[in-house]
Image 1 (cartoon, one colour):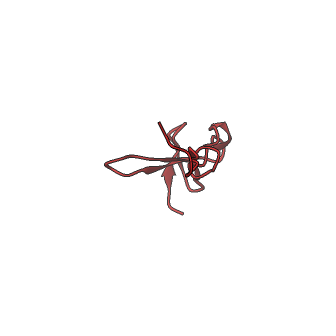
Image 2 (cartoon, helix red, strand yellow; image 1 turned 180 degrees about the vertical axis):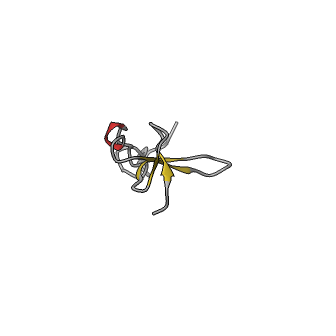
Image 3 (spheres, one colour; image 1 turned 90 degrees about the vertical axis):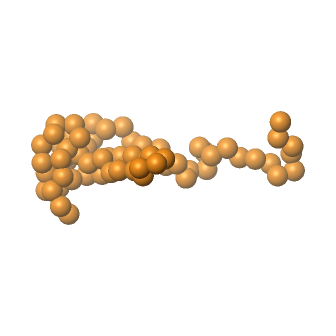
Amino acid sequence: MSVQVCARCQTTTREPVVVAIGHGASAGGGTVYACPDCAPTFPQQRDPFDGGLLARRDPGRRQP
C-alpha cells in the first residue's frame, strides 16, 4: 500500500488503516486513513447496507 497521511495526527505512515469512507453526492467519496496508533481512536462506522439501517417497506401496505 502507498504512503498515506493520518487523519488524526497528520503524520505519514506506510501502514495506513482505513477508518472511514466518505460519501459525496457530486464529487464522489474519499477514503480516510489513520496510522496504526490512531486507528483504534476512531469510532466504528455503520454499514450503510446493513438491513437495520434501511427503511423497510411492506409492499402490501399503502404509504402515507
